Length: 204
Image (tube, rainbow, N blue to C red; front, top):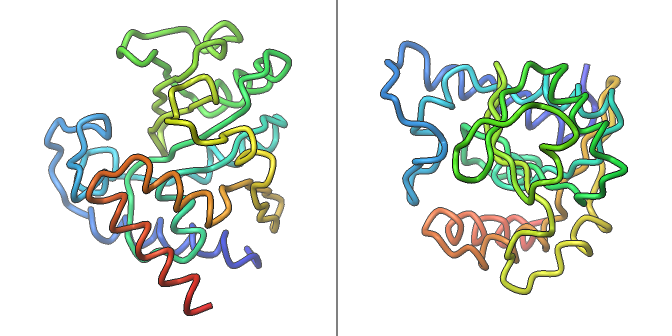
């Protein structure tokens, strides 16, 4: 049983996504083509969405990832559901082997930022960004090498929060940094979710 509130929220979100998408016909729309207002909950990647297997594999292999995006928002109490899992890691080559092992063990297929398939090996994790697909979750795996518009991404990684319970440990962006990232991206869904996180901070 999970006992950390952030992990309980992931469990609850997985159940709610399953209820919402039950019986939904595939449309051919992946998270890469998600609507800037609705988000990835409206895509095929939401069908069967369950990031827990990949998160478990990352923890088991010692892969140093930080959850960002709306799964991190959910871990902070956001009520909005999502259909993808966005990850951030430091891009250090010394960790590339653990990253590759974790994604392989979760049955991942990888592509570069242009959608070109790449092998799930250490070389792939020298890229600034990978797009991944696993049986339970698809999303982006990012590094500080991407153009983040001046955001101190290495600092965000260093001060992330950790939720640990039931044989699983998940690092995730702290609320203030997630809000900054949301506002920097600036899409309608990001601004809406940043405002929700600010309200949650104020009510806490």
